[in-house]
Image 1 (cartoon, one colour):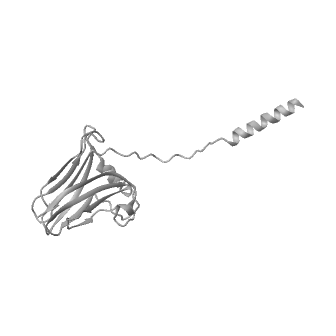
Image 2 (cartoon, rainbow, N blue to C red; image 1 turned 30 degrees about the vertical axis):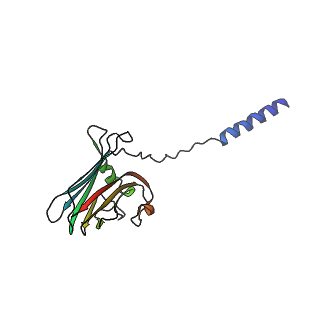
Amino acid sequence: MRTYKFLFALLLTGVFFTSCNNDDDSTPPPVNEEEVITTMTATFVPTTGGDTVTLQTQDLDGDGPNAPVVTVTNNFVAGTTYNGTIEFLNETESPAEDITEEIEEEDEEHQIFYIPGAGLDATIAYTDADADGNPVGLQFTLTANTAGAGTLTIVLRHEPSKPNDGTLSDAGGETDIAATFTVTVQ
């Protein structure tokens, strides 16, 4: 009788361990690690001649003690439309890694937002789109409508909701990099 009880207990133990086996053969989704972005450069080329405007933020020590270096070259001219492009770099590597290429490849998972602040009368339009026809923002136009001074905030979002209404709150996602530039339209 003892032998039967022992065999029965052994059988139950075997059933218990095999029923708890987690042989999930599915492949886990790939992990898309956030890239390090040290430098963001937006270039605005006037369509009617004149000076190119460049907005750049560069933070070579990342979260280190030094503040980002923010530069603005030239002023916008009222009544002028500019063709814009933007570039993202990781300059902690040598040579610098061009993160813009990854954004192009994963354009459905990224969107760049251009947000004019108070005092900046400008109209911004996307001129590029992902495969689903949603804006990306690597290429755009900016029309400087009237003279004044204000801010232009540029935000790169990772995995925003698409389509969205063009606002950060509707887009969601995570901010990869953001900078606010003080600009003048003369």
